[in-house]
Length: 321
Ligand code: GLV
Image (cartoon, rainbow, N blue to C red; front, side):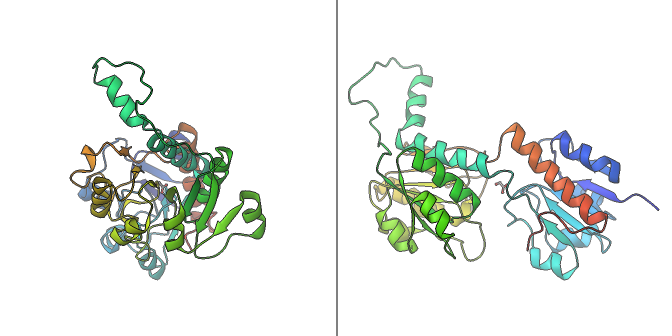
């Protein structure tokens, strides 16, 4: 029997490729820049499995280009808003993602952004790098301490909970909003209080976005929500850009409706809303949530294991349900 044809649509760590090779004919894109769509569609024609990155759009055209023999699309990401899951389901294609393995790394980045924006570390770094003379000053770049402040977590899944653990170690109290309550044990462990979104926004010192992106969470945080937030509060987004109305965010940062923002993701990634770049109260990093050597290897390996499981007739380890 012919070996399955496995296409890896973006460059992934060797651990992932090594886990795939014994199970099929593997072709992988080897460059950091994304594959052109025409070449991608040519490569996936006739594939049994495709591993995708969060920048790979898996829609009707992609699925048409692959053909009806396609069995599995394994996203090397936990977020899967790049995949038309309903369309995959209709065509009998299993779609999988990589939950769990990037929880700690992403929570680290959220905590790092909280520290960066509240302590004005980006501004400080820009002073040093400007090579202008500077000296220690009693009132230089005064920030906001975290002890006793409330963290409001929008989306209390695994990453939200991992962030809550970090924040409590920094002396913060935790509130959260989520479709359903976390277990009483977790609430007790984290001292976390469930609030509705409006109350959370109105009472938190730092609001973090940790929910998945979908049509329901599109612009969940916009002009009205910034109005509810304290003028001393900060917003941190490590989930997906379009959950926040970025134009409204720029306005809120400019007008002082909120004190600052730390962003790892952008509404029109990799483009930024005009003006965002010029704001000193915004800390801006380029989608690094899961960017550690260990985590990216674990993501690639999990995606490969999902692929191999489906190709060998087993259930996927982490299917998108
Ligand atoms: C990263 O953003 C991911 O969804 O894995």
